Length: 309
Figure 1 (spheres, rainbow, N blue to C red):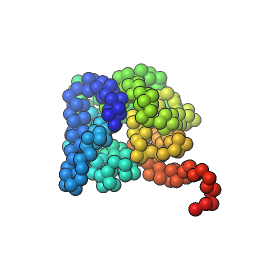
Figure 2: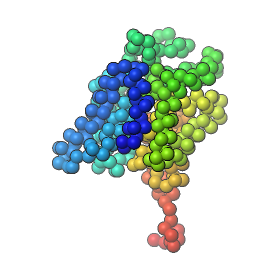
Figure 3: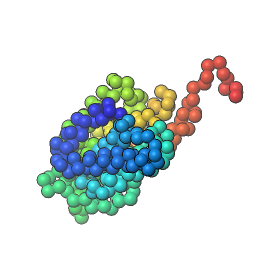
Figure 4: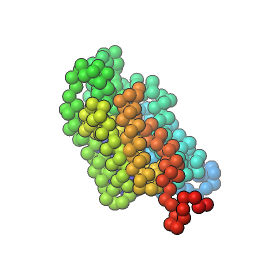
């Protein structure tokens, strides 16, 4: 867990440096609510404290990185409480949860208060301003994956807006100030993910299958595969959320299949769904299929036939 935090520190620090104290407060609210909820749950249930294993810390950090910087703090706290209480502790704690807790908290916020999120005003300093998307003249601001919104608007108009997605490569890689905290630098997220792979903490098959499938389907759907890999929360989801030990398959082939499934539903949701950003629900959907994948790809015990009991 602490290695995951270390891997995320550069991207997190870069987000705080660029977005200021408002990002720091969001991180504090999410981490404080997740760690506090787990501590309180264990205290009430008279169970040994588990906050020292670092899992609640990682959940809060990932939840914060998956939210727009100007998310109301009370909303972030509510998401943190749901992430731990509903998605983790109610299932029995770490090791028993079916769904990734951080993504459950993010999905809870997205579904419950989508109107509030869409009404968040841009920062007067200039970052997080609405981009010039044709047809958005009646909107005060765009929250979430705004560059994906531009690409979606251009696709809906059959390319009439003439958006050159290659112009977004550099901002998405190094300094993207539209979207969530975790979208500030895809390069830093990749660097942290590579560190986790080298350390043997995560399996390369999940991010490789995830990113490769999104790139392939983006090309098949007639869009720029590089842009679609870098944009949105895909890098954060592929390296840090889909690779969660508890909510991903046990076998190597199962992990590759799981990653490809996440990429499939992410790409389909992005190109044909109502929301340009579909990483959260793609991974949660595949989390629900993990028991079936494990059962389907369960290794046969040596010396036993398929019909043996």
